[in-house]
Structures are given as structure tokens and as C-alpha cells.
Amino acid sequence: MRLACYGLLLGALAFSTAACFGDELADECVSHDSTYCHEGVTYWSNSCGDLEEIAETCQHGCSADHSACLEAPLFCQIVSPAAGLVHDTIRVDIVFTGPITHLWLLDQTGTLGETSVTSGSTTATMNIDTTDLLDGSITLEALVEAEDGRQAQSDPIQLQVDNTAPVASFGSEWARLEVLSGTATISLSIQESNLESLRITSAGQELLETSEALDEFAWDTAGAPDGIHSLKMELTDRVGHSIEVDGPTVVVVNQGQEAAVTYSPGAELTIPENWQNVEHHVRTSTASQPGIKRIISWITWDAAEEWNIEYAVGQGLCPHRGIRYQAIESTSGEILIDLARADLDPGIVTSLPEADQNSYVFPHNNDPRTFGAFFGHVAVVDPAEHVNQSLPIEVHYVFLYAN
Ligand SMILES: [Ca+2]
Image (cartoon, rainbow, N blue to C red; front, side):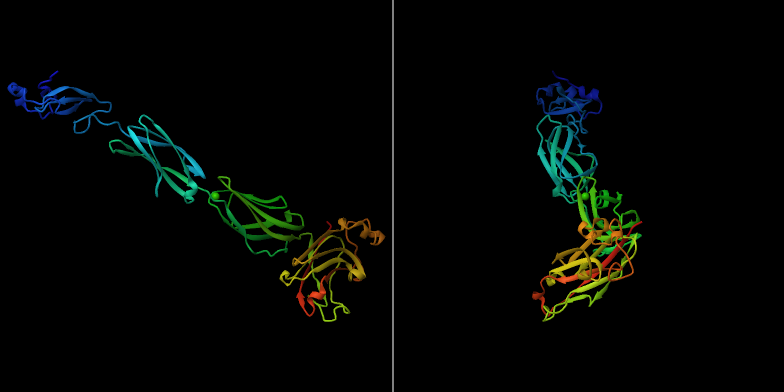
């Protein structure tokens, strides 16, 4: 059906008025020469500018130049994950509308993934392995493209990638078997931007729990039992990575003291040429105190020298002129004896004065030959292998008192 001169009625048209009245030219007009869109309807137009029948009813209105219907608008949005922490492989769900043919997932550095979109679909899912990315902030965006080349981008989503377990260490302030009392402080080094918890423990007992990446641990040792403590640090981040870090082994002494040690003949072992005929052991002596319930004593030497050492502790002058409580042999460079009076071997208890046999503290008197002193006796197990050699040693004695 012909719609002659409809253009005049539309007002804004560029049709020639001559054509409207020049019926004699009408037969020369070529039908379906172009289209014209008005108020959501696109009409065919012949080459003379006369509107013809409806070509298309527009779903999204007319294009700005009125030549055709407007294409469906493009839209896309990332619906998951939400902004926040992510790790390992994440599932990204995207919704979109419009005649989409291709979809990209982008971060600030480039393309993380892409996929073709089948006609009619309105959702897509992409799995992204975030371990391929650096830890830290990423800006996630979806980009869609229609068949006609138009593109649309989603709102950005801010994610924090964390695929790294915490890294932590104790400072070096405390030597092994450092004797601590009162409040003692050690530095901490913690690298973790999403810390959930920091725990410091000793033998399972919690000494500290916080969510702060502290740079030092001030330990009120009075709250811990006297004795040997091996510290451990446990860290967990907010995505569940956790680590354990072994810390220093220290000796807490609040109800006791580290006692002075004297060496005889000196603080080193020496094996002379005639070692089979002369004394070559080292005797150490520590004055006793009343009320000692536990002794902690240790000897250290350079393990690289490969000496096999026997260390014995007891009361009196030495194992032969006193009572030997315990002895340990080692080549490790350290022998540690931690002995409570309550744990003395029953066979040894019977050799104590009768009045001391039921006590929970070590015997004490003023005679260094009996119970006025503790000894630490250092013997070389393999003297023939160290003839004409010397080995420096260091002996420590700690007394813990009964309350
Ligand atoms: Ca982490």
C-alpha cells in the first residue's frame, strides 16, 4: 500500500513537495529505496521520498538519524563474587542483555578470560585461577560485544587476591636457654596483609592471641610456670592459610635464680698425652640453697669438634664424692638436665639422709662435700680420640625454689 505524501504530515521530513503533486513521475520511483523511522516505527520509502508500508516496529525506538530502529541496548554486570577477598580459583558469574556475541573478563592488566556467547543466552560463568595473579588488589570488569561491534562494560568489582600464607619469624634477642624473668620482650617479624589471628604458645599454653601483626611480644613471664619454655607462633590469614613458626627455647625463672658456677680445673676439657694416668675431667660446683625443688642445668660446647661428652649432675663434689642424680651422654653440643626433686629415682632417694627421703626439696647443708653444693661433672667418653686437644665448655645451673 502506498502512503503518498505522508511525509508532509510528519512535518520534519525532507521529502520533495514536488513529488507529492507530480503524479506523472510516480511510476518512475523505485520502491523500498530506503527506510525512515518515526515514533518507533520504521517505514519503507521509495526513491522519490514517498513513504511506503511499515518495514519494522521498533522495540527500542528510533535511531538518532531516523534511518532505522535503535538496536537493543547492551548491558552486563558481574553478579559474583562480591567485592572482597578471593583466593585460588574463583567462579565469576556475569549477566547481560542485548544481542551479545562475545564476552571478556578483564582486570587492570588485561584479559583474564573470554568466551563466545550463544544467541539468546543472558548469563555466563568463568572460572579464574587467581594463583596466576599477584597478591593484592585487582579491578574486575566484564566487557561484552554485540554482532554490530557495539561494546558495553560492567561496573568494576574490587577484589583482594590472597594466595600467600603468612610469613613470620621471632627476633634474635633471646639466645637458646636465655634465662628470663619479669616482663621480657622479643621482636616479631610478620608479613601478612590479611591477618586473622596471631597466637604465641608454649607447650600448648596460650601466651598471646591477637589479630594484630605485632612487631614485638612483651611477655609477662610471671604468668607462666617457671621452667623451660619452647615458644611457638601460629598465624592464620583471613582466607585460611596458616603457618607455625618455632621460636626460642628459654628458661623462665621467677621463683628461683641462675646460680654462679665455678670450674675445676677450668672451663675447658683437655686430654693430655698421658690421659690414662691423670685426671682430665672438669668438675663444676654451684653452692646449694635451702628449699630447691628443681634444678635445671646444661652444658654447651661446639658440636663441630665432635667430642662425645657425658654430663652428670648431683650433690657433693663429684660423682665419686657425692651423689649422682642424673647423667646424659651426647655429641650434639648440648646436654640439658631438668630434674625435680620429686622425680628423683627411688634408688637414689634411699641414699639421701633419712630426714630428706620424704621431702619435695633437695637436701641442703653448709658442707660443700655433701649437700652444700651441686656438681656438674663433665667427662669425655672418647678421650683417646682427642689426645692433645682442648674443648671449651659452658655450664649453667638454675635453681627453682619451692613456694
Ligand atoms: Ca595471606
